[in-house]
Each structure stands twice: as structure tokens, then as C-alpha cells.
Amino acid sequence: MPTSDDVSAEPLLDGRYRLGTLVGEGGMARVYRADDVSLGRTVAVKLIRPGLEGLAVPERARSEMTVLASLNHPSLVTLFDARLVPGQPEYLVMEFVDGPTLGRRIAAGPLSEDDVAAVAAELAEALHVVHAAGVVHRDLKPSNVLFAPASLPGARPRAKLADFGIAVLLDAARVTSPGTIIGTAAYLAPEQVRGADPAPPADVYALGLVLLESLTGTRAYPHADGVGAALARLNEPPTLPDTLSSPWRDLLARMLDDDPGRRPTAAEVAVAASALLTGASVDPGTDAGPGLPVAPATAPTLAYPDKPTEVLRGPSLAASAAPGAVMTSASRRRWLPVALAAAAVALIVVVAVAVWGAGRTAAPGPAPSETVVTEPSDTDPTVTPAPAPTPTPLTEKERKEAEKAQKDAEKKAEQERKKDENKGRGKGNAD
Image (cartoon, rainbow, N blue to C red; front, side, top):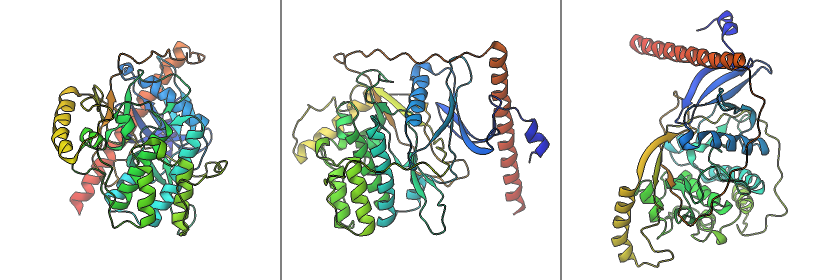
């Protein structure tokens, strides 16, 4: 255990952030619990790994920075600070929350309908704010939903949506190549599988799958993994168990409609979920009014890195099926193995990208799910990315000091992690 003298002697990142415990890491970044010595608060510092330009990591980090800086809602992670300067240590500084992910709560068993209604209302309201800002999250899944501890005794923890690393600004240049599909296979909307551009209804569909999984404790299409589940939804909707109440079945059926134009908006889902929580009856297609109120963020949050998510590259997931084809049940059974085999041959596992999840002391959650990236078609137009603003570069001395501070802090954190592991082994042997 470091003394106060040891702590004060630890190097600071940019003269402000003292890195502490490594709470998780992925292919894109490492995330540390850290102290902001200027403001005296605990934060999460996400250190971007260098040398990953082939995965557009710098562009994704800038996209996440841009999105988070433009949004403000208690169910969204808040960005405090950032430095994204090529050739220098790059990082994002975010809120910290000491709470589990939704994935780990589901791993312990299904949630009650009231608890899921509260989660649905909070996340849908957050998505309403996101969509109103012209942003599509694209990777809504249980491991990207965090729970901030309640501030009042007996109150429910607040659900928070994290990881905007692959979010899309609808009116900006793409981070990925034109026509590229990116997202987690198990939570892709049918139109995403078919290669359509990301849009708000895809987030509503993903939220529907997350809510269904929360209510049942089982992921939709449980007999198919990753790409297989993504292809399966092209031919049949997710199964809604009879054990769910009628209002929940009605809401989920709307959210999981194959036609994105028939799905409710995020604001409509928020209103319907709030009604489910109070016991009222509201049509999820009812006009939600001019807009839901946007409250300032109050509870500190941290988006924890999850286990690395596999990235798959290849042709469109739906390439084996003719667009708009109508199949009978028998033909579906014959077609699906062929499509899965074709997809399996075409897809190539490359590298892991950073995602958020729980720290090393948390209970094990569900296995990580695949993030799917398909190559663009030849007919897609080319979009020239907008030039990023040019920040004032550091001097060579400042750059070297920052790099040394980062390395020293990471080394210190690794030493502390090993000490904790050794203490844990010693305690176990004593017991």
C-alpha cells in the first residue's frame, strides 16, 4: 500500500492526472481509475493505444470525444477532458462510477419488470437526447450500460449509456469507410445486417433486444451466436415469451419490428416505459410531445473496458440472401446453414477493439460478443473526412515528459495490481 509520500511523488499525466488502478483494457485503450489533482476528484482516464491507425482508432477516439462533449444527460457518460494530438500521449478523461454493468446484472438472473421499465425509461430518454443531437450510438448492448449508485437509500441505481467510440454523427464524415457496417452482431438491427446506413431506429431495435434479454435472462436467438444470430433476424422476429406481461410484449413487438419505419422513437419508448413503471397504459406510438427534458448529469460515472470484442471483416452479412426475398419456414431452414457457412468462410478475425465493461474484481459476466465490420460496396460514394482542428503542439521537452509520466504511471499501476494479486493469494492461503 503506497504511503502519502509515495502518492505525492507519483508522476502526473499532463501535470494533472495521477493514474491509479488499471480497471480494464481492450484493443483500443487502457482505462485507469485516476485522481484529478487540480479539482480533487476521482476520474476515469482512457489512454489510447498508439500504433493502431489501421483500425481508425484515432478517428474513433475523436468521434467519441466530439459526441460526449456535445451531450448532457444523467444517463450519459460525461467527458471532462481530452488530449488527442498525433505523436503524443492521447487520452480521454471521463466520469467515474463504481457500479456493475447491465450484463453482469443479467448474469445473476432476469430483472423484474419494474426494474427493466426504469432502465428502459432512462436509456430511452438518453437515446432521445443522443438522436436529437444527430448521433446514432450503433453499439447498444448490456456491457455498455452501467449502473451509478443511487444517491438516496432504497432508490434504484441509475442506468447510464457508455462507449460512444463507434457512434455516428449523421451530418459528419464517416469514421469508417463508406458502406461499412459496424456494431455488435448479436444486437444489430435487420436493416444494418442488410447494409443500410445507421439511423436512430437501429438504436431502438438494439434497446429492444437489451430489454428483452434483461427480462428473460437470455439473449435473443439463443441457438445462434454472433453472425448466426444477425442472419437469423432477417427471417423471423425474436421470440417474446408468453410469461411477459401484455404491455411489455406489445412494446417490445413495436421496438423489434423488422420495418424501422414502424418502430417507436426513443422518446415514445421513454414515455411508454414510464407508463409501465407507474401501471398506466400508453401506446408506444403516441406522440411524446415536443421533447423530453434534459437534466444535468449529477452522479459520477466510468465506462469500464470490457473483454476485447472480436472484429470481423468480410462481405455484407446479408449477401447470401436476395434483398426482400420472402421465404417459407422450410426454405429458411435450408437457407440458413448455407448462409452461415458462406459468412463463416468470408469473415476474417482481425484484432480486438476497446469496449467498456467491469473491472477485474467483478463477477464474471456473459461472454463477449462479436463486433462486425463488413467491407463497403463498390457503388458507395466516397466521403472526404472533414479536417480535424489543429491543436497547439507540445515542445519536444513537454512531449518527452508526458510520455515518461504515462509510462511511469502505467508501471506504478501494474506494480500495485501485482501487489494486490499477491495479497489476495496470501489471504487465500491463510484461509
